[in-house]
Length: 179
Image (cartoon, rainbow, N blue to C red; front, side, top):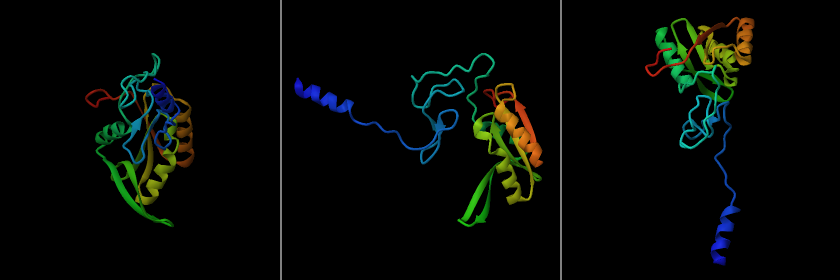
């Protein structure tokens, strides 16, 4: 009996470590593993791989959606007859690199982003994509909660200041990919 108690006590004191990597505003991250989540997300869905995780209440004004930024980018790009996730190479001091443009037409490169903190670098990305491709820069923000929040406001003001086209699409993707 004492041996069993000692064994259980040693299990309790073992350190438990997760894998490294920062998470985005929804508690999700990507690294060497595919993108995945560790906590309830804004979509109201439990974290992947943990069906008993608590569901985050988004309140009555925030629509629930399971669509990702990539889903919105595909939806947007299809509607403007663009090409999704185009890769362009460039050379820097560190060697040959590439960027992936969310959506590209014959004249414009679009950086798409959800109405979250993670989209604050959209203007920089659109400007750099423009530099690499020689096309006009644009930012598309997918407004999932029906209001202009602080991050959308900051992005809109920065776009105006930098001369970058700014578009907002309101709504959420349904089961068939319609907004």
